[in-house]
Length: 356
Image 1 (cartoon, rainbow, N blue to C red):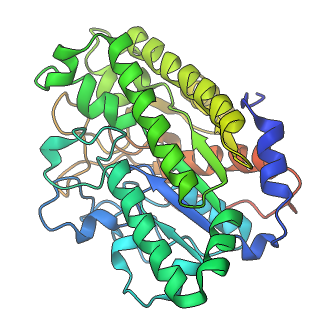
Image 2 (image 1 turned 180 degrees about the horizontal axis):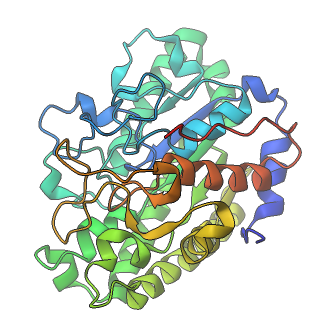
């Protein structure tokens, strides 16, 4: 299957025209639990954590790291392919850490475009919070290498952003939260896009030029949503809403590229690939895509707790828990993304799948 990515030509230009070698690529990651590599472990009162078994069972060392997966995130795998370390969590760094010059992960489980998204997690870093932390990071860069070098570094770095899932799953789609009652979907998506416009513009003002925004996958097909249907099927209306959001983000990116000098934003339309992975799992070597390996598909909760029952073969399942892909699924998604966006890069050896 061909991965349909709007702005692909632009993205390849953005990522291949850099004067830096791949191994010297600096990446800054913004997102939610799909890309969190441990930031929430440092938030004392956060309820959005994965720092307990069985998370990390297939990660190096077999211990939980704060990743919401049995293994790696897509970002981890892409970093491997680029030949660079996976950027460390922002909250793990000391003020004098050289990592600020090499790449940082600001992602936080439960985060959203809107500041009230994931409110019941008590603590999480919203996209606004993450941008604020990037601003603090830039001040550290300036102190280390001077303003001119810091500006150049920020201009040449790659920015990967994956936001919006929680604005639906842990906001609009929750009947006990006000946004789902207060807004129609047309009004809600307008709020998301107008907020995202301001946020991406602020990142640009802080020096970001080469930005890849990951669109949302078919949220109506993740296990936590399927359980809401009578027959365990995908929720069509949710997928329609997600498709509308993705379309609006694409339009926003086109607008920003015209409005902001030297801006090179691209949209990664992962929806078709993820949907194909779910609808045709055997094509990719999977057997189960309608339920999770960690048996937690309930209308409440959905994380893999220590007393949860695991499937026998984790490589056969697309989903690890009720929200997040398995390590094996992340390998497939990362391979497709990498081959599309880094088509001019030297081919890398495929990342290993979990051993169990």
